[in-house]
Length: 326
Image (cartoon, rainbow, N blue to C red; front, side, top):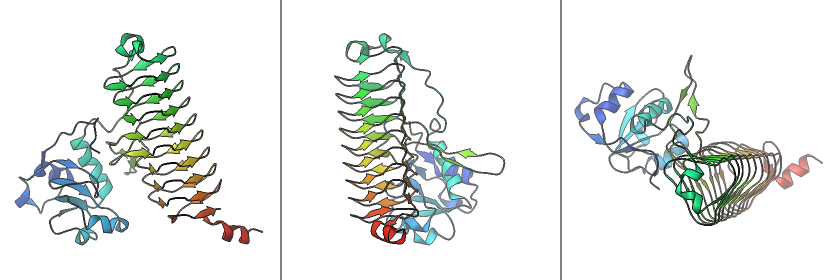
């Protein structure tokens, strides 16, 4: 889905992008205009994308983008219509270009636009506790509850029959109907995205959002980061226990149950009907299939096919693990 919150400054002349990237061998196409920056899968003609790892080769060869920030070793995996912009560090370069398109997406300072809910039109339609603050560009549907000391910052849409607990902070999120978000959650803030660069760590923009489907529950003290380039998604009827961290770009399917203190690193995809035991850790950029069961305390460092049961570190087939640890 298109980003509904961060304002795109495009189209931007390719000459400006080439200048940012310090590329000197593309003078003949510099007058071209670039509409947006997107990932390999969602980009369209006249967009710019990025390609930094062989693991995305199959997606890269089918991208619709007109331009791609990449390396000399990867450029030949792009389609002919996609012009490679060759750089030394793809991710740092992508960060700089994304900031050009979305200059307000790098930092996450507190929302200065908030007002006490009693000063807004929500006072007559929402049941709320004490010291509730509401930011700009917020919509809240009927039959919702908001607990004490909660801040609904800018760019939030909350559906019908939702319950938001106390001491919750939400921004840059779309929350569907019948969702329960329990106390002390933080949803939609900037993810842990930066690049170490000599004496200064460079933060990269997060232009994605958090999308929580219908009938979900988010347990106390959980954190769900908004996406960097794509969105962070929690599928409908998925329940998260307390103190869970969902990193940027993670996508969790429908009817999934995640027990307490689980951490899921960035850009991993969790299927439907998955069960994850307490204190399990899932590394980034993995795919966990449908109907998978992951035992508590497991460390998942490789993708897992459908209908598997795993445990241990590194996580392996549960029968194999039990045989080795009798």
